[in-house]
Length: 554
Image 1: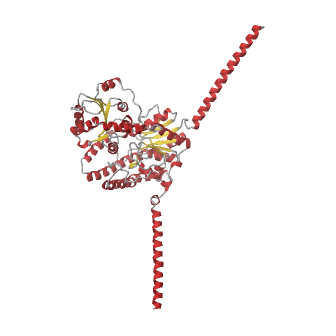
Image 2: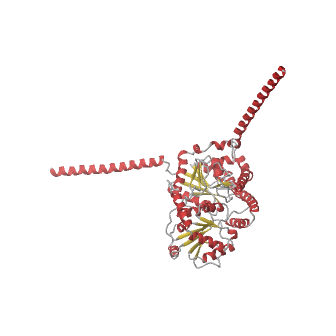
Image 3: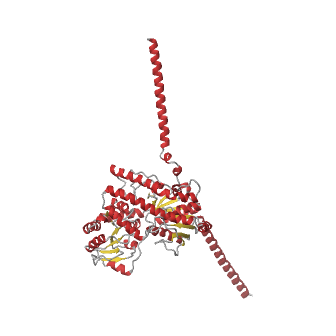
């Protein structure tokens, strides 16, 4: 009987143990459900995001955001042109929709060769007298804007005229449009589909995006391609004001009229492009105030400059061996970005000769014919891991064209810069670093071996450049959230809340004369004039009455 009793006790204990296991599993399951619910309530659930990017270097930083969003469980769909030369059709990160737009009326191919032609034209303009250069630049800019916007117009016209594609996009019920609004095809599509919208932005229409979203005073905010800082003398402020007027004229006389017919065909009466552009919920601005000059801003502008930067990863074995072979002198890294495949031969020869005279090793991203003046210390690569090279302890300086992607990587890793700007905003970008004492800037149009060698030695040997850049790097990193984390937070914020209209100012709905308080000034002037007139009238009447009394008494 005793044995039977003991066996029964073991059975009971086994049953109790089994029950405890079941209870623990149920508790774990409940905790998991609570966690998932909490994730949903915090907007971490996978959203459906439609992405309308721009090509070229703009795509490179957009792709960084897409990879982060994908890692957080979001479903991404990318609209791309069949003529795209950077945005791949197949990707593990997103599903693509490829559109084959009709060719623009100008028929210009805006591929890589186009940018090489632009560079050659830019170098030619740099050799002109300042006044002639300014006039030629404005003419070229207007023509270029017409070409780029004509291409964007063809893209969005093809999409909106395709009823099957539009129906497919509507049925997909996207939570958000993420777009680069440099050209407004994505903006127009988001408005047509009635979607919340977030910008990954630096440029918009004919100028810098702040001009559209925030007060921009030309007295201390330098205009695009002005090559001025925020500290201008009278003549510089005069030129800056003229550039401001030219940008407004290009926007209203060249760009906005292009889209009038499209708006009339696909949108309600009274729709205008500028209002649509200002309707974005959040502007992820690809700068910060470590790089950009201080200026007014708005609550829905979030600064995410350098979001593509990350700690350096180990280099391939052969490249690491080359870096280590530099000894105490270290390495100079040179890259001219994605748009221009090669410099003119005379510039390439001057640069190669200067490199050959250095005791340092050089890693040069180079496409084209090998320079005859190349030294044994220089390694040519058709592609290089730029971020990882800039983060390598052997890297001493970065020779760059001035694109913001590369400059922010230099800031992040604390590497001083020798700027060799070629196109677009590159001249303004390297100027910002020069003003902060972390860069030298050279003129590629008149470059000689002696000029390049002197400037590069100055950057390498003058410790103030590295010291100032390391200080700038510390300021750039000293933030509560990394730029990429901030970008993803605000994208998810807009999805969680179905938009962020409470962050948009009512200034956008005011007519221009009310925005500048000209109607108030007119009212006050009228009241002041009426008061003065009434005072003069009363005084004249009293004087007349007094005069008549005096006459009667006499």
